[in-house]
Amino acid sequence: MTDLVPVKRALISLSDKNGLDGLAAELTKRGVEIVSTGGTAARLRELGHDVRDVSDLTGSPEMMDGRVKTLHPKVHGGLLGVRDNQEHAAAMEQHGIEPIDLVVVNLYPFEATVARGADRHEIIENIDIGGPSMVRSSAKNHAHVAIVTDPADYDELLGELAANDGATSFDFRKRLAAKAFALTAAYDSTISQWFAFADQQQRFPPLWTRASKLKMPLRYGENPHQQAALYLPVGPHASGIAQAEQVQGKELSYNNLNDANAAIELVAEFAGGKPTVVIVKHANPCGVASGDSLLEAWKDALACDSVSAFGGIVATNRPLDAVTAEAIAQIFTEVVVAPDADDAAKEIFAKKKNLRLLLTGGLPDPKRGGQTVTVIAGGILVQDRDNGSITSEQLKVVTERQPTDREIADCLFAWTVAKHVKSNAIVYAKDGATAGIGAGQMNRRDSARIAAAKAKEAAETNGWAEPRTVGSAVASDAFFPFADGLLAAVEAGATAVIQPGGSIRDDEVIAAADEAGLAMVFTGMRHFRH
Image (cartoon, rainbow, N blue to C red; front, top):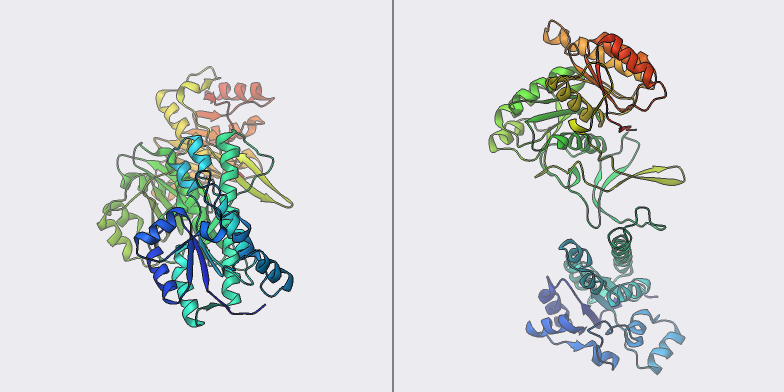
């Protein structure tokens, strides 16, 4: 194997013809013979370039509506033949196989065809066969063939040829081969997922392949000794934090992105509702409020736990205005996430050079389908997204006292927030704002007590006569296994309870609620989050 391989013949077959004219012009200047297929050959002639039809190379016409044109020994022999292998060289000479030194290919737009809602027949016709075959043959034989699959690499290719007097180096071909195999793997992954999920409605296919594309490396992972990166899914996917525009601020970290995702997923639950602000710290909400304005919502969310809000992530369910931006800028905030922001709000944040402003252009649909993936030692856990939601009509009142309309509203608000709090989760809410949040405790009673303690601290900080837990509704992400967690909520002043129900001790818990004069509703749905 020699390091430098002169490019004397190139095979070009493109679905995306951007950059074709300039590429062909430079190759022609270097005396490279261009062989091409169907539409690409026609386009090259329209642009005024000399081109040899692949049918001339193979001695066989294109047939079957173009399905068979490059699947021929004179193509793949020219790609796979090992030039310094005497047996290969003899076979090529015997069968009139001409070597191909450069292949420029991109594939049928399968993903785009699916995305625009094409019918099944058209989708199947946009599964490329010849293209991936040429890509793989070229990539396997990268010792002798350069394979270019991305128009973004044309300039690098031409620079390589210029630097090596019309030849390509082994290191360059090796890099292109790696990219080529990643492309065909991702392409096949997208096709297999369409067959499994869209075409055959499988939930957990026997063999599941997923492809992702690197968006950017991150400074480090959860801790400085861990490396990290952000990848985007290849194929259909929801838009969210990963697609957000970073308007300003420091480079995003792994923790920034994880917390910002938690914030936008929660605030998306309030899309189309009253102005809502979510504050998140370590992937848990520490304050959530809806109000008549974003400023009012911000003040109420911050009041819930201003200590935890320091250095937190803020998300809003509507575009940011200047007055809200000015208020947020008064405390140290790592990231602000919003669908948009007006110019005045951007100018205010611009004074905080380290603050990261992310604009998403919209909010993810909290009811969307899909699956979540967790890596465990030796395997992968896959489950449906928790897209469950409850309306007031679905609530089952289990106590003697019926909840008031205000209590129902507070119950549903607290329940929505509790869905996004790490288990065991207890959330107190009153008048469209969280009053106290207890997250991640090993027992439900401690979560209830922690949430109540935070509410007391908030009352002292804000100079209130009493904590906002007094007269509040309390949500529990799972059933109360014993009455002690419920009684802790009673001590905090809650008057209504929302929980899934389903404990073998439900009767005991209901009796305790009745004795305390509480109104309690069951949802029949649990929201564990780990």
